[in-house]
Image (cartoon, rainbow, N blue to C red; front, side):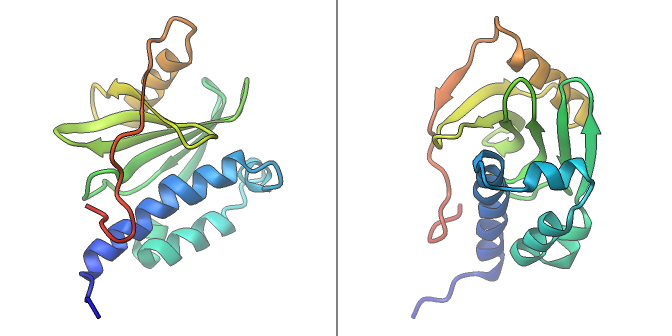
Length: 162
């Protein structure tokens, strides 16, 4: 039996939570996640985060309602590994969209978007590592003139998270 480094396993579990579970909740028509966010009920969010990354990771999460663009900003502690998110933005209008600010190669934070079909779009690097820069880049991405690079880059998986 192969022993997996606990740190690598935790990175993989946090990735799964941020990129797979949360986006799944957003795109699942039977999910109550939007209602929970609207009512400022973060029990499921915090429980999932605790399971993925432990109490310290879960306690680092904050959620803020945003008017422009309309949605919910989830902030995490600064990520320590590629593909982990500093921010997630769940856009509610005109349709549900799922944006992340994640470490990507040499770029400190890249604006990415996960589609309902599992596709992945890159909207470019952030000017700086702030929530304000993240939301500004999302406003640009939501504009009709926005060029989008749709890719499905190699992503970590449970057996090979990095």
